[in-house]
Image (cartoon, rainbow, N blue to C red; front, side, top):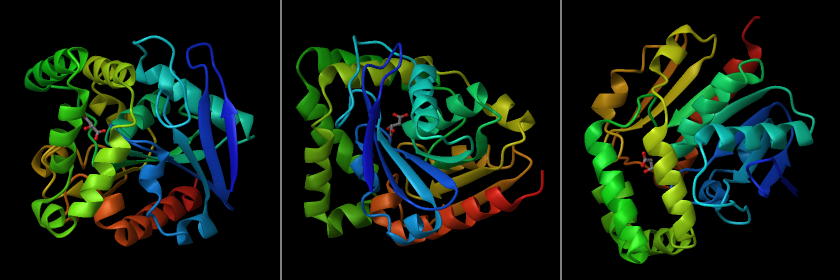
Length: 271
Ligand code: MLT
């Protein structure tokens, strides 16, 4: 494994890990997390792929300037990381918010993208209810309520079955999520609220899409994602029974195996 940092006009420092060999698979974490979200993914995946695992701006070892950025600027920083290490083709797997960044990347850099894996994510924009909820959360965080937000939000990311069986793992994730600074949380919530709908894009783009869906996901419900899961010309659809929003923790072996199959397909398809 090697570690690297780069900077762009909008992002002062983006830290990423590079490990393994073979075609490139970028793993983008969601909110509120860091690149270590992927640590339980079996090492087997790095026998097959070169993994690029960033800490998104303002998380972990990466930095963010000011309060506001856009997911396109975040995608630009990922492109700069790929350029930095001489990569011109990538499958990008994004968890939830990381999936929104992957879609922003695919729209900005279609020639670089070999496939997009949406891991508990959606191509839809926020609906009015979600925007309202984000505004209220931003207010709460501004008033100093970050810790209570994280403590109440993180457990809801997991299925009740996993949550009840693994209280220690939930506590560890709360601790990890609490490392995200308030300014980063506000910046990401603002950027997510302002992101565009990408459903028309995936209908017309020549990009295979993988849909990893948790049947018990209360953040991005399975029934909503299922409505999008045939939009692309090539769709890999996986519905995980008993899993919530966090298959990289709730079912990492299965997730790694499905990402591997999708990656192998994306790099072997003609054209
Ligand atoms: C995430 O898991 O990245 C976020 O919960 C996604 C979102 O809030 O839309």
